[in-house]
Image 1 (cartoon, rainbow, N blue to C red):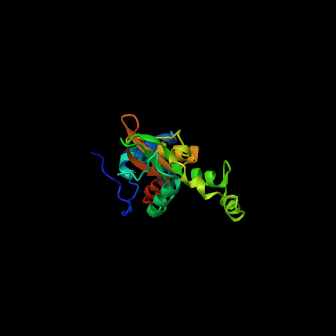
Image 2: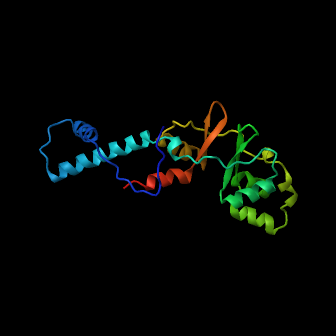
Image 3: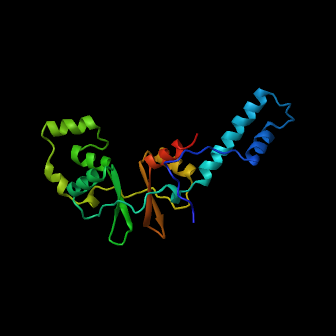
Length: 200
């Protein structure tokens, strides 16, 4: 079983002998070691060790489980209350069997309330203050506004790949799925940053 990452402990990014040998091989020549040479080798070896760390840590070591989720039939108003109570900005939408149907985010809610494709906080505030916002819109079901095309990862997906997905798709959460759409965990952007912050 994979060991869970503990965020309350700092960890040194340990360089092993293989990292140093690989860094030295990259120089392609015999080195008469000087402080500058060693610094260059150390920097190279550290970069290799960092890359290795990003590849060795997997989703099942950093994911949150069980997953806080909302149901497709829940009203948007009820979902807002739930997200606020849990202090989260979004959640997977799961059916009764725990199968992923979509993701509900604050962007989806703001789009509904503000009537704009990419609403800014100011646009939403202007909508509310100008009284063009209709509170009745919050009674629709979550499934009518959720994002249906969801980027997911497996429990074995590496930290490097998750960081790439979050950045390239500009998303804040990655559901971790097994056997099709069964959600077993969730990795948030905050989870990824917390793991990286434990390195020194």
